[in-house]
Image 1 (tube, rainbow, N blue to C red):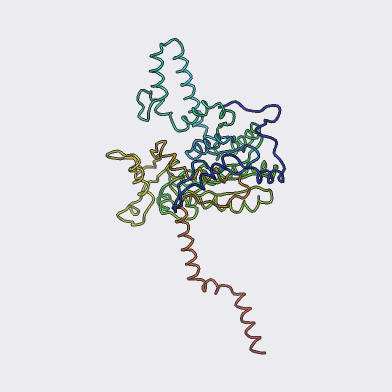
Image 2 (tube, rainbow, N blue to C red):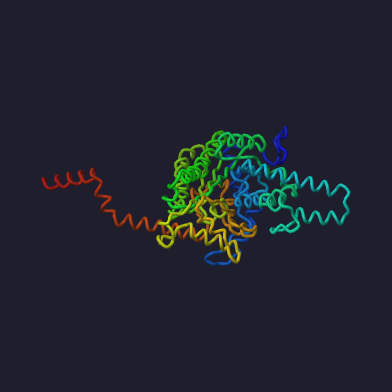
Length: 448
């Protein structure tokens, strides 16, 4: 963990929060070099129907670096976003589950001990050999110990990157945060305000996916517990941190809440019923909250990437399958089979076994075997959207990421519209008061 930055006088990089009018005027009149570069790149691009995402996101104009609070700083989306934010000059406070944070501290202690031993008198040749084996081992663990193989996670690599960048160290801070624990949420917000002076943007990116049909998740106390855990993380956990940050936003009359869900907030997905329910619940909560906090100049944006983003970048827990919902008995395209097939392809083994774990007679949790390059490519569009929207003066209430997501949601809305028109007469027939007024009008015209 980096040391706290709490100088006696305000840092020149983070001036005291200006008034709302001066913020709007400065934001409208200022343009960062990053924004200009991105706009130039976009103007010089081709006219394809689906252009690639820009290499540098068009950050919203700002009169000062922004302060972000990320609820799951070790997720692939949060790590990629943090790189962009730190490179842009923003400040980031990243929450990490206490257990994972302790594991990273233990790994860092072992690395320091290893470096101290190498500096303690071993020859240059031994130092070079030991360093390559202990720190630069590959994914297969060549030359590294079992602890290195286990702990050299994407988060660990990013923490090492932050440690090597002197211009990043003072603008990055991690702390233990389990969003299901209200006390930890309060501590995180208090620490962010104490260390960085304020919070400008809250990014809620904590989620987990539970796979199973509605009946499969109702067959035992264990599976019912999975449903409760799903809502504790995806709904109540997000509510906890949002409620905690609202007083600081109201006091400043400024703030932006970004919520990462998925297009499952629009689309029901067979085999992910409880996951979709938790997404719809938190989106309904935020839709209502947006009206309540608008008078305080607090913005709310729901960002919806395709389903692969939240599912493949978080733990996937599967309930035991029922025979009635196996592919031979049920032709519905259940998520279990689709995700299993995808996991097998990602595993890339001659005889893959990872996807089979989702069909185990016991509750199982797995993580998608994504390489660093796969993760970066998977979340690239989402990260660019978040960087471009976060802190915007007039952000969208919802933003759907990617061509496929937009097409899927358009199709769903078209279906809803068509069904509404098909049964509009039935809907109108239920308007009894209107029918009474119509009847009275007809009677009056006849008597005349």
